[in-house]
Image (tube, rainbow, N blue to C red; front, side, top):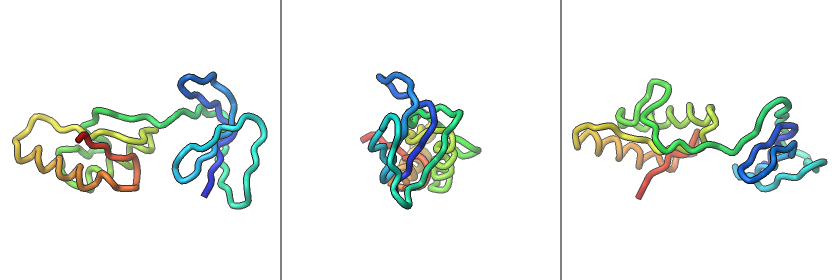
Amino acid sequence: MRTWITNGLVVNPGMESLHAQILVEEDRITDLPIGDFQAAPGDQIIDASGMIVIPGMIDIHIHGANNFDTMDATAEALQNMALFNVRCGVTSFLPTTVAASQEDTIKAIEAVRDVKHSKSGAQVLVIG
């Protein structure tokens, strides 16, 4: 499905802020036409009037969110963090551990590994 985001003030690094349309296809921005745009039948249109539209943010250091923590070492905790983050404009994040026992740290890392391909919420990033 194609989605158009219209009427918002588009702010993009290296670009002047402008009123452009944004075409999103398969979760990727594919076009930023300025001026009139051609929506096809079945396209979703999101009116962003009065809003600022920016690229999604990447959080490279986050221990937890919404009463869940990386060290909970569960898929449920990480998925809840992902859902909370995407509602705040974060499209991907790197779950961060704290100083803990080797056993607890390994459990947390294994939980991150298990949810890194989840499709709900912000994308869980891993290093290595």
